[in-house]
Length: 250
Ligand SMILES: O=C(O)COP(=O)(O)O
Ligand SMILES: [Mg+2]
Image 1 (cartoon, rainbow, N blue to C red):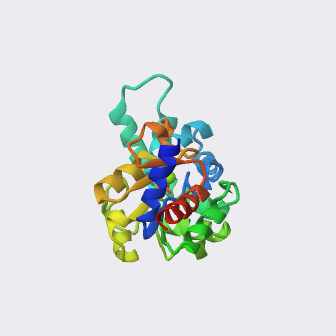
Image 2 (cartoon, rainbow, N blue to C red):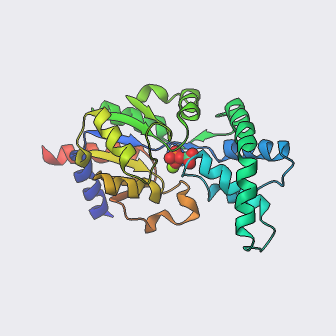
């Protein structure tokens, strides 16, 4: 454990900026996803889906989430066959499903979502330690900005980039490379803070160090198995590690 803390302190001592993921890292948005998806499924007269199933589908953007949900509710129990027909049905329903989902999501955005403990304090402390901050999410920018505003987080960030900001989303490294460019920091000194293998893979391929929170979604898999430089239980641990590293260097 002491080793872990020393490693985190050393990492934070060579960090100039942080790129922070949104869903599963700063805000528990599962309630929002469940509510907006539930309303969309009712509008389309399709069966409901359980929040636990939705949690496994979050992290690769709203388009991917919607396709995964439609596929799930259109697949009869235990039948993996007929995959081609199901894909075709998903694509036929998609435009109307997206229109309904976007409508409902924007109407409820943030109302069924909660900040994880310590997020505002953790971001405040990182800013206080002189780090530049960007929010980088696979969520559409039009969903991300109002959510950050509703939760009182928008002011912490120098930049906010959604899944539509660049040509490719995480786990591709492009959004991280672009975020580093915008921050004006070297990837090796820009820390990615996320909740999933998606964030970790993008960070590795962009040359950014990565720390993962232990409480997020990670596609329904145990997050500790992911290749990362460290794990934290709450965001304030980062600024605390930064303080410890600086104290040790003096
Ligand atoms: O898939 C999503 O919309 C959530 O994405 P995020 O974890 O990158 O914020
Ligand atoms: Mg996430």
